[in-house]
Amino acid sequence: MWKNDDVTEPTHDDAPEMPDAHSWHIPRLIIAWAVAAIIGTLVTILVPADDRFAWLAFAVGASTLVTFALQLGTAQRVGFITRVAFSVAGSVLVIAVIDVANLLFGS
Image 1 (cartoon, rainbow, N blue to C red):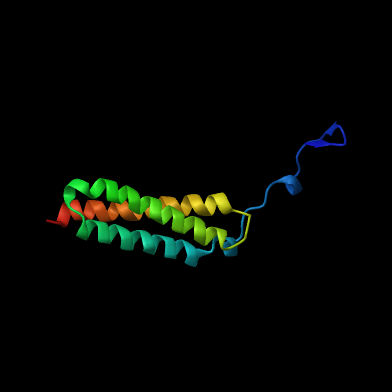
Image 2: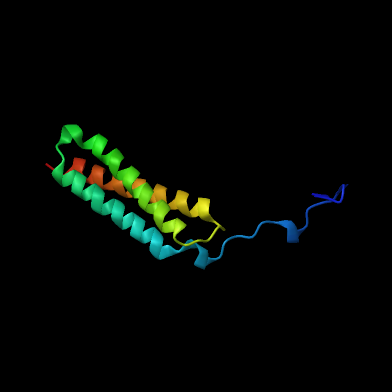
């Protein structure tokens, strides 16, 4: 680390802190995943098979926007990127599971 033009070894005190459990805002993650599940289900039920891929991409985009809104609403800087990445990845996974379930068990 550079301090006053001297190079020092990093200490345990210089290490970045891990976000605590409260900073994850678990209910906000669950809300984002629920929105993804609702949109994914509606797309699967209402959209013809030929147009489904484009609408599923829309569902991922819409759930990403919901994620950003929910995480920006926390006004907490620490862990923002991690929370958004985890939430978006979960939304994509939820939509993928719904689509695969439709392919396997749907008409």
